[in-house]
Amino acid sequence: MREIKVTQPDEDWLEKNGVRDWPIWTKDPSTFDWYYDSEEHCLILEGKVTVREGAQEVHLKPGDFVVFPKGLRCRWEVEQPVRKYYKFVELLMCFMKNARLNESGVFNCGVEYRTIAGG
Image (tube, rainbow, N blue to C red; front, side, top):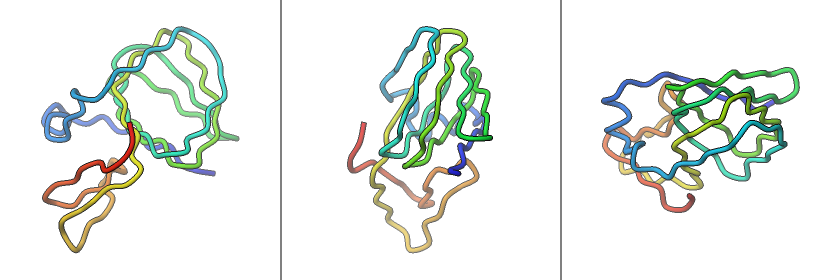
């Protein structure tokens, strides 16, 4: 099972990482299956969603920053119209020797990171 990570970052973190410059995705209430062939980072702006993978059930609401891992197969249940900032991350380039995942599951180099490929 691949873990879906959810945090509630503050405005400073969102600004520092340029989240509000990402594209916006919307979806009306519906249920559908989804496969992540790339890791996705997103910030839920509006709506109510339940994402299920096997026994794992994650409830998403406005303010949640979510990391969906590459290879995840899940079912989305959009209960209220959803609106989110999103970015697919295929490859991150770092400019420090000791790069690592931070507490949000985001690759953190301590100096900067940038997306080389993806949405």
